[in-house]
Structure formats: C-alpha cells, structure tokens
Length: 408
Image 1 (cartoon, one colour):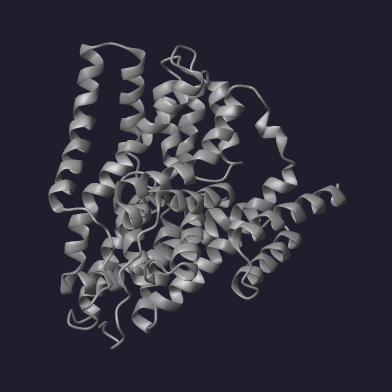
Image 2 (tube, rainbow, N blue to C red):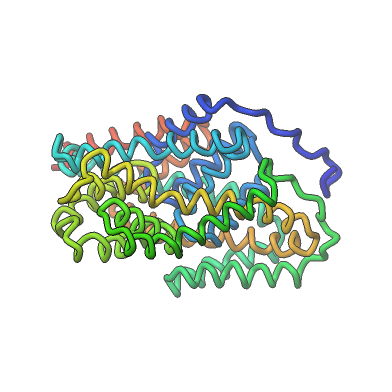
C-alpha cells in the first residue's frame, strides 16, 4: 500500500527487445527539441500512456540522471529499457532512440545530401515551436502531481528563478541540493514513506562491477593509447572521456569534442560547424553528433566504421553509470529520510524544467504571434485533444512550413 492507502503499481510486465526497440524508434524519429523536450516525450509515453512507472518514480529517475554525467534523456531511456528487459532492453532502447539521428548525420557527413539545406527553415522552426508545447505539457503534468502543496510550489518557483538568473550547470546541481535540504526540513520522513519501486533488475554486485569498469576505462584508456599508439584507440579514448565528463546536457559536449578533434586535425573546423548545425535539425540525442564526427574523420577509420566507433565510445559511459548507479539508488531512495528529501528534489526538478521552458525552448522558438498561436494549438492538441506527440510534431512542422512559404 502507498501513503494514500492505495495499492502500489503491479510488477512490470516484461517487454520483448523488439517491442522496446520499436517504441524507442518512434520516439527517435519524432523527439525534436533537445534533452528537455525528450524528458517530456518520455513522460507522455511511459508514465501517461503506457504506465510503465509512476510519476514519482519517473521524477526520481530524472533526478538521478541529472546528477550523473552524460546525456540525461538518453540515460533515462537506458534505465527504462533496463526496467523492461534487462541489458537487452537497454540496448534496444538506446538503438531505437539513437539510430535515426545517427544515420541522418552519417549520411550528411558522407555528402549524400546537404542535410542543412534539405528542410525549409519554416519546417525547422516549426519543430522548435512544437517543443514549447511538449515541454509545457510536461511541466504542467509534473507540477500538478509533484507540487501539490504551497511549500513545493514555492520550491519549484525558487528553483526556476535560480536557474534562470544563474544559467550554469552548477546552478542546476545547487537547486537539487537545496531542494533536498528543504524537503528534509519541511516533510516528516514518516509522511509518505512508501515508494513505488523502480523496476530495475540489477544486483549491487553487478552495479559495483559496472561502476568499477567506468573508472578503469576512464583512467586506463589514456595510458593504453600512449602505450599502443593507434588512431582507433585514440578515438575511443577521446570520445569516451567526452561522454564521461559532461554535466548539464548534450550541448555541453560540443566544446569538449571540438577541443579533441579540431586541433588534432581529425576533423576540420568548417566540417565541425556544419555538423553542429545539422545536429540541431534532427530528432533524438545530441550525442549522435559523435557519429557525424566519426564519419568525417580525415584518417582511417572513417565513414561508417569511424562513426560506429565514436558513437559507441561516447555512449558507453552513460550505460556504465546508469547500470552501476541504479541498484544503489533504489536502496537509497527507499530510506524514509531520502524520500523526504526527494519530495523537495522533485519540486526542484520541475523548477529546472520550468526554467528550460523559458530558455532556451521558448526564447529560441516564439519569435512572432504566429509562433505563439502554433505553440498554443500544439499544446491544446497534446493536452486536451489527446493526439499522439508524433502526429503533433509532424503536423506543426508542415503548418510552419506552409506559413513560412505564404509569408515570404
């Protein structure tokens, strides 16, 4: 029984890797708008529609992935795949969510199409506009469930204000820490002590192994690349390190990667900037930019092989950290004092999402009354007409493209 006297959610039903792959493939084809929007898409798909986990468990999972280095939205996807079919489920979720944008960027890098010019500007802008509706829906739903009282509404507002006034990753970490302390102060650990379990089938022993492997590779790959000089090993070292040391979302990885591949002559700066622009036009995780860089390498391995090496190397730390942290996180969050802290943290997470709704999502997309109208109808379509997100995304892109054509 939970704290409200209602029965806890039933144990999750195992999904086949193929069905997990298809679910995440659809998300990978339609999840435009960056990491914050991805969290909104995932919430709608797995909390609201499929009920794979509760609102509170989802917020706790998002909070954990905010703490870990790496791409938070991809890590949430890995954890969701783990919950349904263990390691094969995690791989299926990663492959489905990552493959569409990775393939598009590899094709662009190989010169098959000029991807940056393949889509009219109006369509690309429409994808930014619909991200406003997706994030707004996520903020609305999470605030309603996770900020039900005055204290947590206040914490949400304070958290949003801090992140907006001090725009840095450390501001986000500080908000999570401060709201955790506020949760301990405001809430009696005995209140709402019961918690829906995160359905992760990994032992602590296995978690310790994955965490150990993460640090062994982080410290050992630079040594190996010096002892055994090779282009392939140097690539794995560089991209693994970039994926291990990124806090604050996928965009933060861009300067790290530029410092790794441009001065070394692996990729020229013009190609790097072109790939960065194309990455903004595709759905899915920003870390797939690594696939573009791998395909653009001036030395072998390059092309498809180079893309696969760089893509796997940059995402490997995310898997190791998620698989390593989840067994311990589940035990920690069952502690009654941790649950009191998480009541505050969840409000802080909603505040961080609210701040992201304003910038960069709203500020980069809503530039005219037409944009506001389109975002408003996209929000209504999601919230009240209950249309599937992929249909709203495609419809908004088409409408924006037509509007751009008529107004030019």
